[in-house]
Amino acid sequence: MLYADVAVFTPITRAPRALPAYTYAIPEALQSRVAPGCLVTVPFAARKLSGIIVALSKPPRVGDVKPIESLLDPQPVVDAPRIELARWLAHEYLAPLSECLRLFLPPGITVHSDTLYSLAPADDAPLPRVNDLQADMIALLRQRGGLTRGQIQHAFGRKPWRPALDALVRRNIVTATQTLPPPSVRPRRVQFVQATGALPAQPLSKQQAVAARRSAALDYLAAQSEPVWVSWVYAETGCTLADLKTLEQLGLVELTQGELLRDPLDDRDYVPTQAPPLTADQAAVWSVIEQSLATAPHDETTRGQGDTETRSDKTVTLSGSRVYLLHGVTGSGKTEIYLRAAEAILAQGRQVIALVPEISLTPQTIRRFAARFPGRVSVIHSRLSEGERYDVWRLARAGKVDVIVGARSALFAPLPRLGLIVLDEEHETSYKQDDEESAARSPAYHARDVAVQLGRLTGSTVILGSATPSLETYLRARRNEFTRLELPQRILGHERRLRDQQTRFDLPRIAYAPALQDAACPAGTARAIDLPPVQVVDLRQELREGNRHILSRA
Image (tube, rainbow, N blue to C red; front, side, top):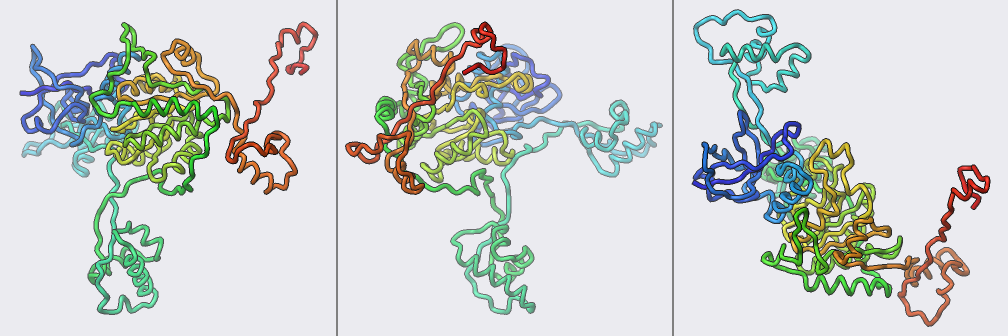
């Protein structure tokens, strides 16, 4: 008999802070199918719950071991580096291991059992005496069959139905059994249609308008090389499902069921762009990062074996790390460094996660990445529907997405060949859950620290970008735990683009860039502009000199 340690997803409100993994026996029928990272269902007290296998284990020394009941997904939902990351999260933030693993799953995929109440098999004996509420409950179950607690609650509302139901169960009038509902999120199944290539042997309809619709549908489908979602056919031709079914009966089209992925970027169109020339500062920064990416570990055996020192409280990444603090003023071109690094990683066949602090900043970041890497980018954030997050998660797990852009939760995307993690504006407090979120969901992680640990476990390069780095990151850079790179100049624009704007707006000169008249400057060179002047005013001195207004004299 084989055994497995399973992190069980108990209801969050009841989960103890140090909930361990529990040992279960692996039935013979599942022994060749399960592995660490698989999502399974297990008996837990009087319920059935889902959980993730975190390790194969030895048989326990004492007590009976319950068996795993079923496998919910034939493929592992979490890989080995992310199981280790979940263990680190549990230790670092004093959180249940199962809740740390839940971060890596899309909403709605985990399940737990519900109680199904049904009338006991009837015999010839008359029912014992019951009160009016119990009689109504028996009538409801007789009419509708087995019902869950939620359905009974919906039927009886505020009435005291719980004691009445429990009394019926004790008297064996009603039976209570555990049932496992399907996950609330699943692939979207729709109808597709494809032309068979046959020619109509008879008029498509006696009515001219109907015949025109069906003819338009046939012409549209004949031009398509693969099955088309029927909703597209409706929109393009004005036909109906009844028209398509009639055409199917005539042997002209074929209707099939298929899966339609819910792509959050499906209705977006991005114009591809070329990489602009780098400034001298950007070129100096990029040469350091490029050399690091060229020597990054490429196979699984070298991942997680970087230069680290383990202390009693945490793991500290040392100076040989691939964590970079990109300290650049606003407008200095940090995003171009991100894009160059992503391009180098994608050329190696690896993948990228790019984080922004706020969902509102996601569209412009997506636009930059999608324009540079068309067809290879997707997005994850909390405003997507459950179905969209589930489909993006499945695409990422299958390795069919190369770049994931999003807010904090995008860090947990299951990219199997991760090579680069970017945190833009790493100083922002939104990378850390606030008090309300922490109380509702554990663990209360900080995305910056998790990104550094994930980079260590997967052998990925981590770039932390900011114009005003956090004190923690700045200190670690001063200690040589991170490599600090600087972009001190604010880029106004490249010369050719500035000259085009000058011509377009009929400007005799651009006052803030007089160097444009320098004929010795090579074409394509970027122009820098000073940051706005800043004056620090001591308001205490203003008070001493009699200014009690809310504004200083300056």
